[in-house]
Amino acid sequence: MAQIINKSAIAGGRNLRSRWTILLWVAPAAVFCLGLAWGRYQVDLLDVLLILGDALGLPVSGEWSSIVQTVVLNVRLPRVLAAMIIGGGLSVSGAAFQGLFRNPLVSPYVLGVASGAGFGAALGIIIWNQPVMIQGCAFFFGMTAVIAAWLMSRLYKASGSMIIVLAGVIVGAFFQSLLSLIKYLADPDDKLPVIIYWLMGSLSSITMEDLYTVLLPMGVCIVGLLMVRWRLNVLSFGDEEAKTLGVEAGRLRFGVVVAVTIITASAVSVSGIVGWVGLVVPHLARMMVGPDYRKLIPASLALGACYLVLIDGIARNISSAEIPLGILTATVGAPFFAWLLGRGRTGWA
Image 1 (spheres, rainbow, N blue to C red):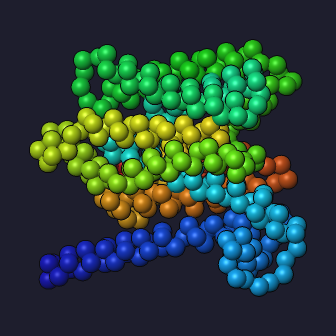
Image 2: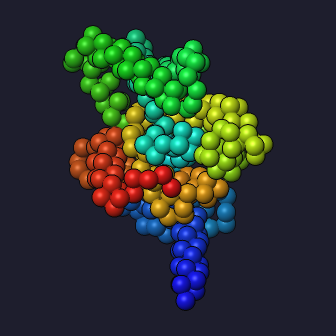
Image 3: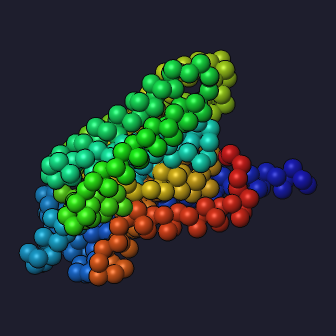
């Protein structure tokens, strides 16, 4: 009798996870269309589909005003695409890092990329105050921070993945102090408000040109993480076990760190610092599809894309003045973690 109950429970759990998997494949398309229709200037969902079909060269018939087409294609489309790419990229990065370091509290920013990118953006605002230079400086110093953390970890003889996390904390604190110095020296009436607003994260000024600059590096690295996701299952057992199964832990760890760094630095360079996405979404995906990284990485990608589109929609519509994304993601993320702890899900897996 007990065996029958256990088999039924296992089968029920598998069916539930299969349904979640199907939903996570369908949800991004639905949320994408919702993001294009949702706003202060309401657009009918059918008009959104017709406009997209016409833009793709499909034989569609319908009538819509030029204003509606401009709103959908020129204003909302770059923003929704950016939210999906950045949200999915940060979520995949967080899931990969949590498996790599075998720590459920690790986020894509753990190696100091956020502090480095924040300092770089502030420096770009102070010196040039041009979008291209701000993004370039943010990306460069974000990469520099992670490289510095990696090199610092190689100087110590201690083994294990936690040493690079500690090195990232040190490098992050250093760049955070430099960022504080930049803010102290900035003009309080001109440059300082721009720096503070950028650090809080926003997609209000995103353009298709911004997407073109980050789509290739982020896309390549996301595909790379998807291709090696089964190896993260092996790596989560430890270096010795991974070696016995034919996985070179050192090379895999280095490759994952490089991919996550490029994704995160690219995202931060165009959107500012959007926290909690790479920390919260992988846990939510794990609750839906389980701890198997073959399913967890794609689920995090789909769920993160949906999550940031919805958060950005709230930021655009909740008040007359747009709320920065970092405020809303922290407002949602902190209670979620409190709820997660309250359920006793403090273990790994």
